[in-house]
Length: 262
Image (cartoon, rainbow, N blue to C red):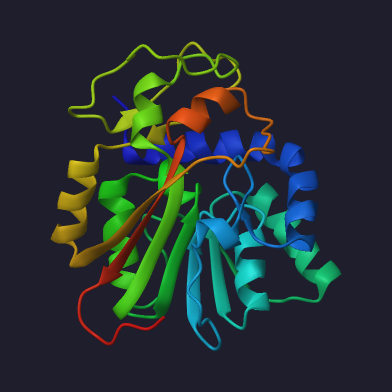
């Protein structure tokens, strides 16, 4: 049985081992306009970011190399970026210096941050905590961090794709169901010798129940499809598959109470 401390340790060690592979993508993302997910969907199409970020406090959970928080900072936000992996944070710190774009970096986990209650106008996660933290831990934490009326936006693999994912990382998802939807939560991939981490995926119904239990109101569920010229380096899903069914999805939910802002 995987315990809380066990999966956190395993995921931290896995992403520490991947850190060198993400330096070049980090440098590219820090230099470029916002694009999202494994297909690089432009912000103009995905529409993840609120229109007005000037002076807003944002918290990124599972920030990795910090490029999402860099995008937020350039739009006038005051980002706080949290990640458990020292190797990833080292890349983020170097790029902050190179771009003269300082913001707060904290080594910690999305399940329990050292930040105060109701400190954030926006909590965001692109993958990060969105799939690597237990939703029953990190969603209550995100709700605690949000001000009334604040928004949580997170992107990860779609629930649909999770039903078809192969056990081996280098095998693309097919069209045969490989696991049940009912009770889906922690997912491990014992047939993949390169990865010992734990992912978390749930049914849409379970997500909605969890949001409601934490005073979070659903505003949108955005299903993402790659553009016609999109490519990805990730072999677990093909372009052909992702053009027919959403391989990624975005939840937008808002903390109850307070005024709604654009």
